Amino acid sequence: MENDTILESHNYVNEIYSIIDDVLKNKTYSNGEINKWSNIICEECMKCLYSKMLPLKYIISCYILKNSNAETSIQYSTYWGKDDRHLQICWPHDQNNCNMLCYINVYALKVSDGSVAHI
Image (cartoon, rainbow, N blue to C red; front, side, top):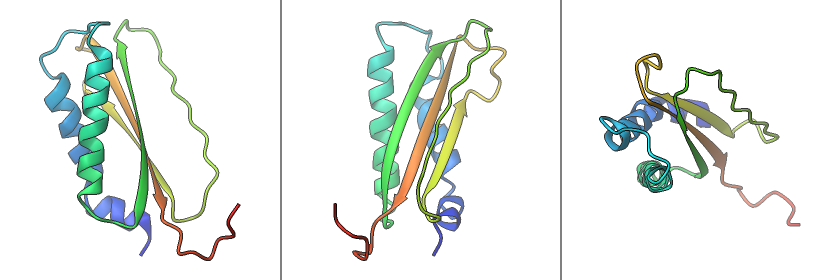
């Protein structure tokens, strides 16, 4: 079973977007709060993903930025097997009328079947 199919069938993007929305909706950007919000979002996303009990390991990163109408670029680079996947979720959908932006990166890595040489 390919992780692409797994990721699509469980509708991760919508679930993670809802988590972000629950934490940040109706909030005003605050430097003093972004660490707390980022931690909550990452923890809730991990709970959601882990609850699926899929043969995957996850890495989650959360970036919360003040919306200053300046261009933002978040890059990532990966080198992995064909069964590993990456999702990037941007919040909110309407980025023109908000005071902050949130970008979540989820890396889903297939758990080894033991045939890989140990380092």
